[in-house]
Every structure is written in structure tokens, then in C-alpha cells.
Length: 352
Image: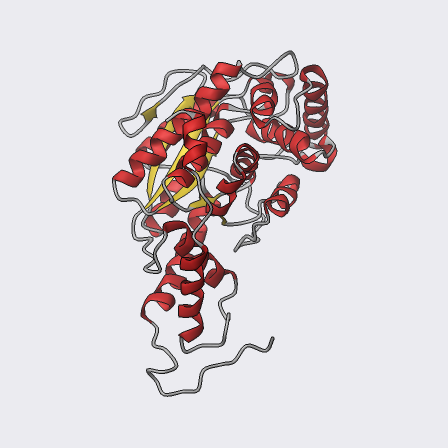
């Protein structure tokens, strides 16, 4: 589907189904709303999927891999060659998210959307749009056509995974320099200055952080992205992984599939998706709040409450995967716990 067709397919979550899920929660023999955000997540997922029988047994972690031309400005601790190495290691199952995904019974799908060189690996999904973006301090990060393609490829993946029987999609990314591009996106869309949103990423020195914030400031001044046009922002100061991630979220929403948002990069993509289609926000579940400064502001803007606050900044989808066992535990209570009636105890009554 095209971007326009996808947007037309996205409808708000079903409130009646969500309410029935809440009624089920309130019958379970435990204190009312005692599992807090976990109960809310399961009820919301019921509304997203249009069934009170919540099943998250098959889960996919899609990791978009792409390079960013802004690394030329000295905004990272390592060079962009690391992106290719980690992409290939994702294919081998030898990265942090792969190890965590095994524990969480999730399958990792690495996608080459814009790595700066060719990469090898049987499990890599090859959807390369460009060999990285251009240096956004010198002009637009990508063409409008590349930005649209970055969005449209993600839809195809979400639809394919839904057809294969996956029940929930976890977002992830890999790309040296992508906290710089995502900070630029956040700065424009939230109307906040670079020093408010840009952090140290994968471990910048104080001098490097100054260069990073200055690069963002110059990129925004040079390109004048329109804060009311998310696609314009993506094209001028975004990244291919952010665009693909955003479209993956839109694609999942179009097929009524819940999306577990990872950290700062994925949250930036989620903000882009919500600005393109506000109804897409209803299919997002926040896993954690990243240690990057803008993460809190983005989740607040999206009105999403994360399960975890662990100062994670690793990326790859690790925060989203870390939240999956919590959802499993919530599903176990929701799906198999006995009710007040079954154990002959007077139900709890709401205090308000």
C-alpha cells in the first residue's frame, strides 16, 4: 500500500472491546487495577486487536539499520563502519537484542534500509534505499522520494509479519549517528532547542556533545524543516531508519497490530507516525523511557506511559524486548486467573 492508502486503513482502537477487557480485569480475584500499567496495556491491546482473547505468543523485533551522513561532523564516538558490523552480527544472532530476544521468545528481523556498504547475512532483509543519508548540516538528509520510500517499505514488512501470524511488533534500529538525526526531528516537532533534546548517545565526550548540538542547530537553520509537515522534517533532518520505523508503525496500525515502542529513536519515529496519522498513536505501547533527554518529552507528547525506567540507551530494540516478559506475566494473570465469583469472595468495589 502507498502512504495515503495506509493512512486510510488506520482506524481508532475498538472502545467496546477495550471496555470488555477492563471488565474482565475487574472480575479477577485481585485488588482492582493492582497491576497498573500492565492491565492498561492488555486492555488497550484488546481494543487494538478487536478481541478480548489477547494472544502475544508470536512476537517479532524489526531492527532497521542505516547510516547517517552527519557523522562527518564529529558527533559520534565511533565511525559508521560499526553500523555494517552490527547489522551482520544481527543476522548471526550475536548482538544484545538477539541474546535478550531468545530469553523473551522473540524473533529478530534485521533490515538493511541504508547501511553505507553492502552487508552479508542470510537473515538480513534487504530494502536498501541509499548508502546512508547525506550530511544534513550541508543540505537535506535525503530526497523527498527517499523519505516516502523509507516510509512505504515499513508497511510491507508489518503486513507480511501479520500474515505470518505474529501478534505484536517490537521496534528497533541500528545506525551510528542516529541519535543526532532523531534529536533534530524531536527538536523541530516538539519546538525545543537542541540543548534540551540532544544527549550523549552511545557515549560522547562533553566536547562531542557540544559539536552534536551545534550540528543539529546548523542543520535546522540550513534546511528550515516545516514543523507542521512530518514528511518534510523526515526528509530534511531525519534518518532512513527513523522513516522506516515510522512507516512500520503505520503499517502495523493499518493491520490492527500492537507496536511495542523501543527507546529514543523509535519514539522519534512514533512521533513522526502520529503526526502523519494521529490514530496510529492508539496502536503504540511504550516499553521504557530512554536515558536520552528527549525521550521523556516525546512520550509525554504521545501520552504514552512506559513500563520501565532503567536509563537504557543501547537501542536495537533492547528496551522493547525487555518489556515483553512483563506483558507475558500480565497475560498469564488476565487469561488464567480465577475470578471473585469462582472463589466465592465478594468483589472489590471501586473507591471512586
